[in-house]
Length: 453
Image (cartoon, rainbow, N blue to C red):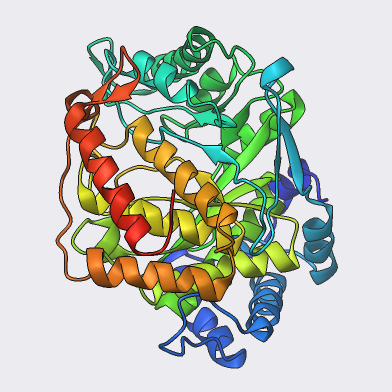
């Protein structure tokens, strides 16, 4: 694997081009590879079943980076790679990561398509909370027995102070890490791995938050949209690697941007994953394809995004060592029927496509209005039932999902939902009666559609 210091050196010596030129060229080049390798949705399948597409996506992605590199926004230069360097990095990145310590240690691994082992899970956060709620919320998510690691929350204010400058950012970052450590201890799981979520990507802010991390903890170091990296996160990657922290990248793509439609977004997600491996030595990646309409909570969108996600996961699981996670981000908020149905679809997808579960939360989250432990427990329950029922094959799973979409999601308008304190008792670690009854009803209706929990 190319050293991170070598990456830093190349970021200062590669060809210089304006960022706008990179953006405009990205659409043309990705469109070329989509056409060259015949990546096109057939309008029928929920899960991809054409194995030849996977070869085209990975070969096109490797060729793209070998010819075009990765863009560094700090220096406005291209980081260049040889094809053999890319292929070596994809072979050398590990398929497993050891996280946590003592009895709370976990081995987090790459899953395979239609695998029948339980999914790994990060059950929460990557979501804003107010300072008075955050420590108790952390404890509640850590109390979920299946939790493998727990990501930090973010904040608009900390102890009454606006997070609007570098000193405040550094303080907020330290509070996040310490709240995480305190929360897992209070949950009786002192060795549980925590993942630092950047309050800001400024290196000074990142390093302040990373100071309290142990060797079994991790750092979120995401490749930017449009296949771009930056020196601040590269600095954090250097430090985290020296400290022995694992690294996670957000490598999903948004259809409708410079990558084009869902087919182009497939390429961008795979490109971002490879860029994360090369430039930050990321080991775990939440990947896939979303759309601006669903991310803005305007519509509950399904096909062809579901098919596109399946191509991304299948490509990375079959052709690389990347450890993939599916980010469950429903368009409806907590304590709504649509939220639970959207999560059910994502849980089934994850099992079939070979994805672990990453920090489920509402797409347009507001402070305290993003997630509760019930959604994570629901994802675990549904995914376990898929495996136990033998419905992890693509054809069988598609029938269940298509029934959910037809009967429960098609034509529905996303709902805002309720805050965590409105629908979840953080002292007793249980949903309110209203939320419990809603969950039980959805559970019965899912059984009527063919999946018994």
